[in-house]
Length: 444
Image (tube, rainbow, N blue to C red; front, side, top):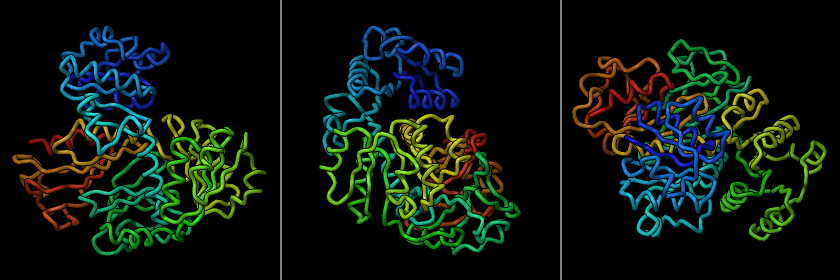
């Protein structure tokens, strides 16, 4: 396809990189000189300097000849105007990143019928749901749902005391109808074989039926006590949404916010949660507020460095679980080195949502990992190469594994001798280098 992307910030840049690597013809519109240089130097994409909400600049970018426009700037208004202008020039599909929920209600047709937006990316809401799901499955740092919400993939970081550490994958005792589909070790993803020995701090991806995912996690995790108290650093869009979502399920929350007006606003929205106004977070303050007694510490300010530093302090002082919001990809390795348990990236969440929209049809769901690996749910079309023999016979790539098959209402955990049929839903874990080969196997 020919895709025009307005905005080359973290979301726009990641989306442009992802789509250009898949062979799409990508044009990026960006005003800031530094971001223009970054795209020009690192991506195979045409860069147009200018305001993406300007009809003149959109014409220069050839928007009328494009199949898709993605508006991913930090301005809701600019994104909406860009989509309206693109629609008026015949662009068949538009995507907009929207921060303010007042502009978009999924129950109302206003966004599509009046604004000309086919798909809305709400990064803060996606990040909130990501953190909430992880906190509600004790022992896991991330949980993704697939196959019509009947299958879940839980990410667990192996502690030194985990019964799985030092064992080969085939020796790890898991409940029936579950398996280890992937491992991320020191930032590098791999598909484990039976003789792969698991190590401390490995991020292990466990697939199982949703109703039994807690049992699967308990087989390798050592701390599976429920989360009852959470401290949130940052009362912005993500922090407030998360606090409200946790209160709904009975979890006690404390929110730390440096802006006094925002702190008062957050306090007015919460039913029981406590809100602290604190200019700079420190070890002394965290100890004073008993961070060592909370079940989880979540840092989701707009500053990646502050989030990482606060999460590191909380980890050192005894918080059971630490979460940091990270917008910039270069900070992900630092999070691992600092011992932060969970990183949540609005950039990756948005890119995954866009990828699912672009691939709409065969691809049902996509989860992108910082390592470059992906969890993909695909539908097997008629005539696909992957359905012409058993999984072993079609030479499924070594860098990918089929974790589950949804056939009607039945969920299957396959082996190499199983055959895929047209209409099957398939959950695949794949490293970055094998993504193209997997997609070719599922092409109609």
